[in-house]
Image (cartoon, rainbow, N blue to C red; front, side, top):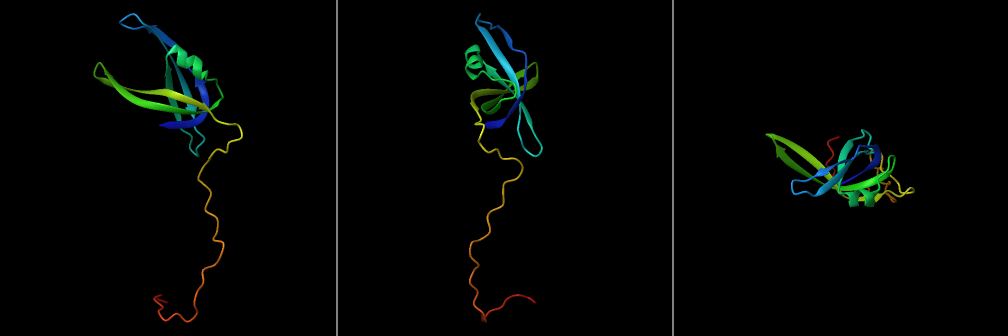
Length: 123
């Protein structure tokens, strides 16, 4: 899945050591889209190499590709939204805001034959 918008928050990085002794690091970000009623999404980038590779900054316009997963802990369920690809939105690229434009009017009027033999209009 993809989500395009502006980074509005960069949360504090998290880190630790796994049960088997491996160090881990993750960083969370909040992105807001540009719809008529803007939506926000908090997503995570896992791994120091991915955090450095993506180098996400506050205020950037991005398209984030992500996966959603859920896990259980002490009889409760928690969702995680983990980014696997981040692309910068080009500065000159048009952004769709609100509803799309209506289709253009027809270029030619249809041909009507005067004196049609069948008139099924009720008036």
